[in-house]
Image 1 (cartoon, rainbow, N blue to C red):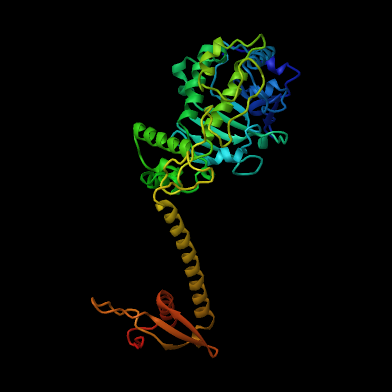
Image 2: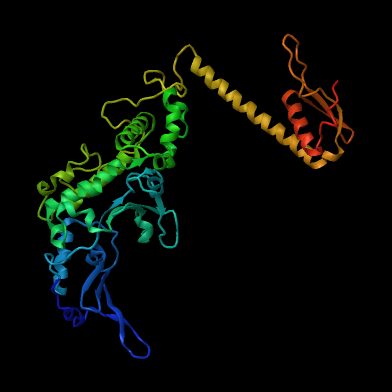
Length: 454
């Protein structure tokens, strides 16, 4: 770019600093000045660069956590003219597209949104450090692009609202070369910008896989044919490690979304898309009126839009409650065991009326869980007994736990009586066998010391 760097050096608003050699006082490296969130850089050979957030620059350097519309972007570029910046000759080396989404209205905290991301563009997730804390954001880095999801309110230290930032960062310009974007003027072109946002920002959101764990904690409610598959679908590592073609991955994604829509109280991806649509409407709205024709493709991205009322700044209710989003439809209910729809049954019904099979199965599962807990408690008691006073234990009598069963001969139940401090404790069946096995480990019995058979 043909630019006279002395224009910046003579500008009183730019206070440049440079590293100098201690002895020769010779300048080393580039001159740098920070002004309203932008870094103005003059390299030794006279080449100039500007780095930073133009959104922050528009906000007088305060932060970039506010709403930033297309009109605001135009105004910020016009303000750069005082530093000799011409959009046609300002060559881009990288830039970011991002929206700040106010999640306060939907009553879902940012952590829930962040933790629901299972898969994004085939990239492994990396934690972002925000104000010295981890877990407030994640990045997914591909060859030329980086996708960021993070808590903007935490980064900007805003306590009045919850802001979620979704950002696409182009680290290399070859990621957008097919869109004819090379200069700052190209980003001001509404047609080019619309296509770029659709393909490089909104399409990745559509392809990202979201699953809110709390909505379907167990596959018990799902049909039996999906339960095993569902355990894989909700696992982030499963999507990354297994090599699949695009067609197969899409088929699995559609299956997971189908299960979410049928058995979860809410679909967090749809809520997120509604929030994005709401913010896009605000981005494309001009100060001259509500003319969306130049950004029509953006406003058609997520129709029907439940989160925005066209033509006003009024924010509608973001659908995040438990009722069905479709008007006039009764909330669907499904049997907790077989997954069969039971919408027409009583309001407090949990199981289908299939000859009480599902109800009895649920009862048996409950009894089984109770027995397992009781067995576990008893085994803990035995282990503690052997550990604490194992050397003082006296084995009174027992059957042989290794005795093979003979067909036609009734097997005898294993029973033992253990004398502890003059008191007798009785163990039978599986408890006795468990006791004997652990007792052998403790006393290191071998074949030379067989257990007496009674």
